[in-house]
Length: 304
Image (cartoon, rainbow, N blue to C red):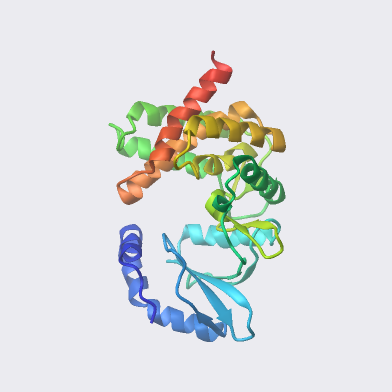
């Protein structure tokens, strides 16, 4: 029997309500089912956040990772995205069960995250190489969401919080909505995007290469897919200086539109902070500070 951390249990019940409670009540049965169906032994999990993720050893000796989640729209999108990426810059999908919310993935060993690379420039170059592999023209027939879905989420937040949410004033949210609308409506070339690509979702492999994990799956312009990377791994750093330099490197390496990237940065930093406040009642201080960093950088390069 696997003992689930109380914080993880609370997260599941807070987000998924009764459906989450039912999933937790049947968790041991699900584990037994997976071990039998895929002929594996599931080990104690990695650090848990929103999904149960653990290493597993197949009966034939192969190292695997199993990911279990309360079945939902985001899970279905992840499966679709993994199939679209098909191991190109991305961890390989071995099998899945859509009804039960199960993913069986290859295990990336040693599996250190990009946070282990202390040199900022080197980390950005690794991330940009992953982005080059992942991004491809959006497929015509797919159930993946577009950036418009995230615009709709931000508009809903604005409507439901007429006085703002947490430290974010309604004027800031509305400004982000307006920018999001303008950018979404003026996109030209649409690509298949990761949707949540950051330092903790890029892992080192035994072949001395790096691969992405945990795609959200999204259609949109490439500039948008850089923002989560820009928002992460900012602890004990000068956020303005670090984001400024990261932006310049990514623009140079990937031939991106810097002006649109900075605008996306502001709009998505607002959205990410709002999401955290809705889900957990708290927020990441670096995400929040980045709202004003992106505004300052945009002003510096395009308004001064």
